[in-house]
Length: 133
Image (cartoon, rainbow, N blue to C red; front, side):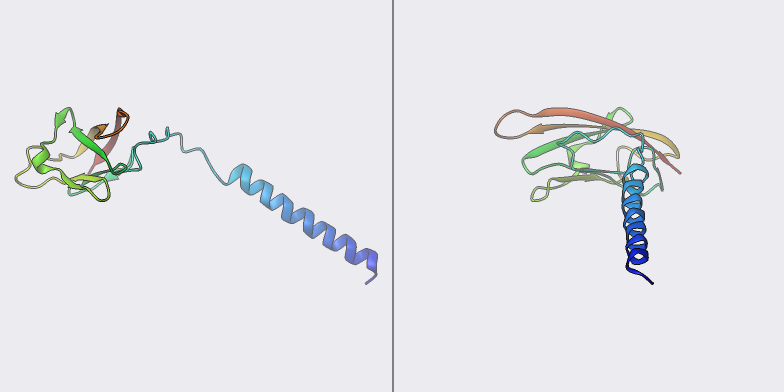
């Protein structure tokens, strides 16, 4: 092979690599159609629009120094039933036989409202739906 032929082969391989990278950026990150979480909510579970089994807990992760009230289908979950880990900011609730709220198969709506306990005030709300099967 001549030097020109090697140059042409490497040039084509380089262009192909660049094309793969560009196509990855263009088509690799599909828009899920969901709105992003508010910046105060670090993580929620179950995810909006998901289908989950009956024993699935609701978890809300917020920064340390925030408190969350959880409402399920319009009913506030009592603080005595919410498990709160202060060191991580995770609030969770799972249905049990003695819970005031029970999952039934079908759609459910969760509303969380948060407030910052110290410093500048920061309050807000976020709602999402999922389905229990």
